[in-house]
Length: 343
Image (cartoon, rainbow, N blue to C red; front, side, top):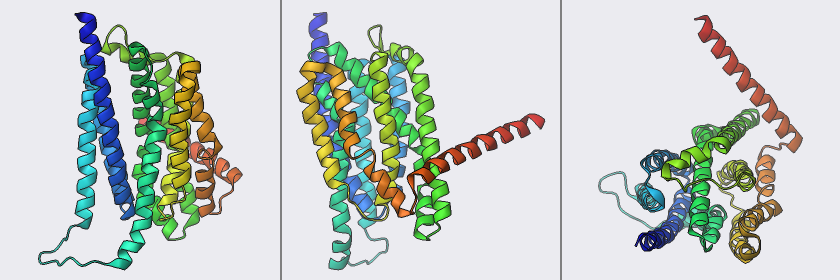
């Protein structure tokens, strides 16, 4: 009876996860419309708030020992909230703000926003396949223990990625404003700050996750654990590169130019298809190496190149700016700490 109950719980969690994935596609659609309307900052704000909600809710589930079923049910509720917020933001952007407002079809406005809107929608679908394609492939394994461990590990890493995106959400309006004004020195300095802070947050979280991750997941039960250290390091490396990539993609599409549709769709579908084909032969190693290799072919460097070209920024200059901004932030933090001690 116990084994039968566990098997039923696993399949229920699996189908909840499938529904979760379908709703994520809808979120990508509404986020694309919202960003196509020029509300990039609003879209990122919703993402940040939902990420905070995820951290709180999943931490409670982990602490309470909710198991895989509790985790997927919580994720389904959160994704429904995310969908509601995205859809409401789009409707608020379209609904009239004054009483007596008359609707009128503006063909020029439609033609101006529609190309960016459908491209952003397709990019978000491709990005979802890139970020969640590994999860969809791993779900085809026959071992429920390996599936639950892998999916929980990926969700923990994804939460860490969401936390690392907080500096971009905070600085995005000012970065875009400086670019629109043509203030390239300010744009470069603030971009370097966002990149350094995001990468530092993710790297620090990864360093803490390696020795402490099993203890955190241990709250789920005695069989819960992270993936082996070798696989975990590869997954962390892949998502660290995604953090860097997503910053430059966001900055570039803020100019209403969206050239990443084909790379996003091809990369996402390739990760799913090739990962599925390699899974029976190489297991989880084939899944994560597929993601790294596919992304390295284009996405890890092409959006970065386009983003740097906005401000005529060479790659060597970019690296020097990152080092200089990191030194400045560390020195300022040390001075503040020294002043507090003297006070």
